[in-house]
Image 1: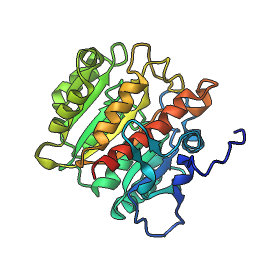
Image 2 (image 1 turned 90 degrees about the horizontal axis):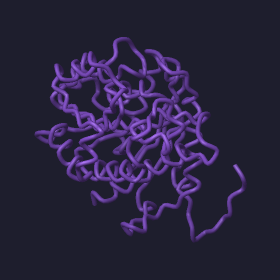
Image 3 (image 1 turned 180 degrees about the vertical axis):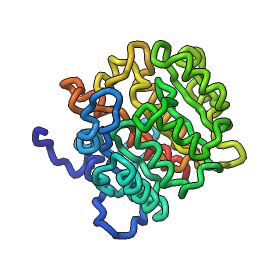
Image 4 (image 1 turned 90 degrees about the vertical axis):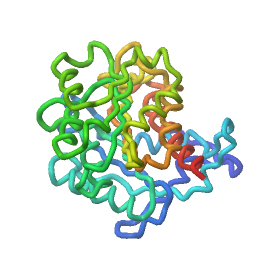
Amino acid sequence: MSLLPNDPLWPRAGHWFAPLPDGAPVRADLALIGVPAYRTSITPTGACTTPVAVREALLRFSTYSGERDADLSVLRAVDLGDVEEPDGSGGEDRTAATVARAAEGGALPVAIGGDNSITCAVLRGLAGGDLTGWGLVTLDAHHDLRDGETNGSPVRRLLDAGLPGCHVVQIGIADFANSAAYSARAREAGITVVPRGALRRSDPAAVVAAALDVAGAGGRPVFVDIDVDVCDRAVAPGCPSSLPGGLSADDLRQMVFLLARDARVRGFDITEIDATADATDRRTVRLGALLVLEIATGLLARR
């Protein structure tokens, strides 16, 4: 990265996240966790490089939202670094333990993938192993209900582990990106599906409110999985499975802010960006960084 100017009146978001030594108590509002999983991806990916790339991209942005007149620097944000070798059962255990450490310290965990396989371990860390009382909202082009243990199977694995399908909402499911068999599997599980066509006819705020009413019914805590391939390929060329016709960056950012504003939401992941496949202007990685900031802005709005 080229040397960026230093202006004390323009604090950089990348400097806002304080590194936290191993074993130190978290005591923060927001915790960034790198989870560079990639080994089980169906599509070959360099997503393991993305947490570092997103941290670098955060240096391109300030901590101030002019639209909402919100300065994120009033929140305490920490960076727990990257989980070592997060793939496989041992890696998932390490990921879950890191997420649990963040949540126990009062922080909203934001896990930066890595591929979408990380969703299982991150939610397991938040839920403490009991998923029956949780809800899930996914922003994703895919159902992720495949068999096996890959980036195409996290939702199925969570259902098998006890997450109630009737409290799962999938927003942005795309045509020609799934199959009849997996669509039927979603229906059988009781999952609420909001396809891309429905989004074109809806207000994003209404979509988010309805999703939270289902996933968070009865006040249950909710986890949000953001698979950035829900976006249009022009917006997210660094996502191996993004398609023409997906969400705009603005729509995704707005929905993420609205989700983060709701106190029932207890954690996020941002997945499926391959920093090695991004456009030369780094637009996908920069969108990932902006999603982190939208989450933080939503968290601040809870106050």
